[in-house]
Image 1 (cartoon, helix red, strand yellow):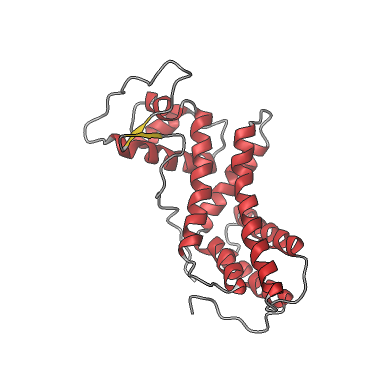
Image 2: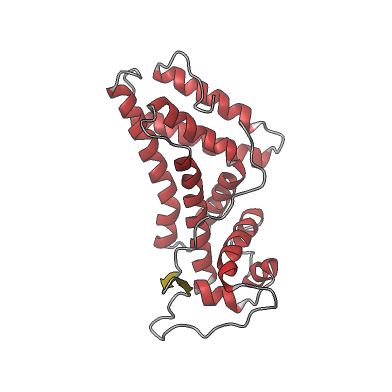
Length: 243
């Protein structure tokens, strides 16, 4: 298994963007029409700017916290005019929403890409657990910004749903695989929801433990947990799909 310390690669466009005639269009401005175009610096391409802002914001929000990161901090990290953040996202909250959506979609994009047809239930569970090793940096950033947001006094229903989406989708992936394994006789009879919650909780714990203790060997811990889960499910022997 390979650890990825380079962070995620951006393969999705920010979701608040709309497309017109195949081109990105900034978010509407409360019924007053589209914003006027913002001048770019030499060498900048407008299509690159939204994704660059999302990636820069993810790093800043994760290394600091939402309230302390300013629009100027984010724009300076990319080297663009601060007004471009309002042009594309409407506000810092709008950009934060896109950061959460990006991190969630990127996590599942790589997981889905590893799937083949007729994947065995044990492989699905194993691949999801291994995703947290391969994409540890991304998962840890998502966990950090989610925890930071949860501690803010003012909450947004939209942001709550965006963060919850990750856990809802994780529960679906794990729950379906566990129930399918039981139905096919691959697993012993277990409570699917409880087992899925255990897996999710352990993975979260590994992300935060590594924040507190950087030398913590998260890969070894997650691998051990995978073997424990498979044994709990009644899988006597298991070889990772990659082998």
